[in-house]
Amino acid sequence: MDSNHRVIGIDIGGTFGRAMRGAVVDGSAALAERKDFFTPRTSQEELIESLVTMASRLAEGARRDGPPVTALGVAVPGLVDEGSGVVHRSPNLKLEEVALGQTLQDRLRLPAFLVHDASAGALAEYALGAGCSVSDLLLVVMGVGVGSAVISGGRVLRGAHGTAGEIGHICIDPGGMVCGCGGRGCVETFASETAIVRRYAIAAKQAILAEEVIAKATAGDPAAARIWSDALGALATVIATAVALVDCELVVLAGTMGIPSVALAPLGDLLAQRINLVQLPRVTVGALGADSALLGAAAVAFERGGMGHPVSEWRSSRRSAADPA
Ligand SMILES: [Zn+2]
Image (tube, rainbow, N blue to C red; front, side):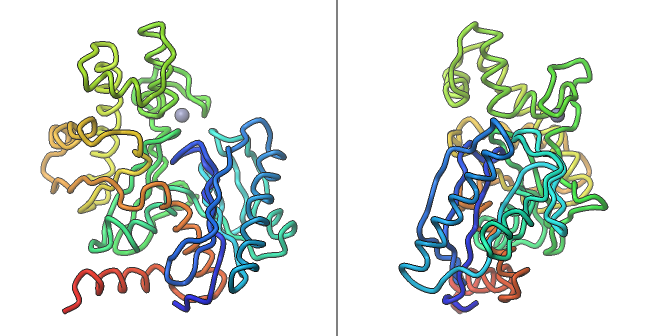
C-alpha cells in the first residue's frame, strides 16, 4: 500500500466503547490526527453532526500536514447494510433507517463507506493484530454492547442479511431483563457494561462503574462475583455455539480495555466446559486495543475506494516483519 494514500477511519462508538474515535490512516496503517468525541445518544441528528464535525476536522488536519484524505470509513454497531450505506437499526445509538453513508458523502464531499463495527475490529485484528497468523477467527466484543464477527478462510462472514455475528441479542433467559433491542434475557443483558452496572445496582443498591464491579468480583465480593460469573457464563455459552458452527482456531476478545486479564481468565475453563468434540480455540485479548474498529473502517475505505487491498497487504507486511527469514 502506498503510504501517500490516506483515509479517515472512525469508530462511531456504542459497542467497543462510549467514545467516537477517529484518525487519519495512511496506506501503511499509521495513525495521525487522532480525535475522541463523546458519542451523542440523544438524537440521530446530533450523532450525524458529531460525525461530520470529527471527519471535517480530521480532513483539515490531513490537508495541513501531508497528502489529503480521499475516503472515509465508519464502523457502526447494529444492523448495517454495508453495500447501500443504510443503518437499519442500532439499538445502542439512536439510529434507525438512516442513509448514513450517503448523508456523510454529501456533507463531506468524500466517498463514505460503512462497515459493521465488530467486522471492522475483526478485519483489523486479522490484518495487523492478534489474528495476523491465523485464517479463521472469532472476534468477540465485550464493551458497551456485546457483538462478534467471524473471519473464515480469510473472509468476513456477513450472511444473507449482513447480521452474522450478532451474538449480543441471542436470548439466554427468556424471562430475563428487558434488553435495548426490545427482547428479554439477551446476552447483552448479562455481559455488557450497562448490564453489569444495572445488575450490581439492583443486587447491592449501589451505582458503581462496571470496572469497579469486576474489581470487586475478583476481590471476592459475593454479589459482584455472581454478576461477573453470570456475564462470563453467558458469553461462554454463545462463544461455544459460534465455535461449534464455524470452527475457528482463535477467539479474540476486544473492547476489554478496563478488564484485567485475571478477571477474564475463567473464560477459558468455561469454554472448555461447554465445547465437546470440536477443537477448543485459543482465547486471547485483542492486540489493537481501542483502535481496532477505526483501523478496520479505514481498511474498508481503502479497499472500496479503489486504493488497493490493505488487509492482505498489511497482513503480509506484519508476517514478514515477525519472521524476516
Ligand atoms: Zn437484545
